[in-house]
Length: 160
Image 1: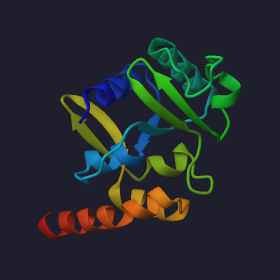
Image 2: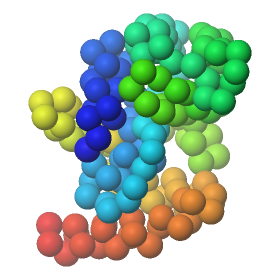
Image 3: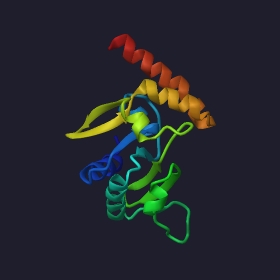
Image 4: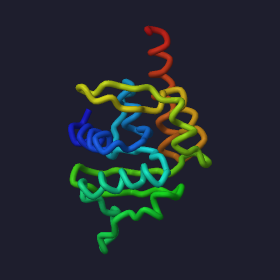
C-alpha cells in the first residue's frame, strides 16, 4: 500500500475519526489488483466526529481540489451527505458523507472488515459490500472495475 495512504488513514485514526475506507483503496487492501489515486472514506456525520475530522484535516492542510481560492471544508458541509474532494499534504483524500443512493457511515459500518496495516487497524468496506455499492453507483469507472472485483472475490472464496 502507498505509504501516503497509510499515513492518511493513521492520522484519521489518531484523531479518533469514525470512518470506513471505500473505493479503490478498500479494494486494493483486500487483494484486488487495481490502480487508485486517492483515499476514499465515508465518515460519520455526528457533531463530535466531524469536529475530530476537522482537526485531522487541519493537520493535513486539506483544501478542495481544483479550487484556486484554497477553500477548506467546514463543519456545516461535513455534516451533510455530499462529497469533498480534497488535496492534502499526503495526497488526494475524498470524504464522502454518503454513497450509492444515500448509504451513510452507519449503514456501511456493519459491513466492514478490520485490516492490520503494519500495526494500524483500519475499517474497510467488505469486498462483497463494495461490489454492491459500486453496482448501485453505476458510474462508468465503477462498472469497469466490477469484473476484477468479482474475480478477486471468487478467488478468495475458492482458496479461502
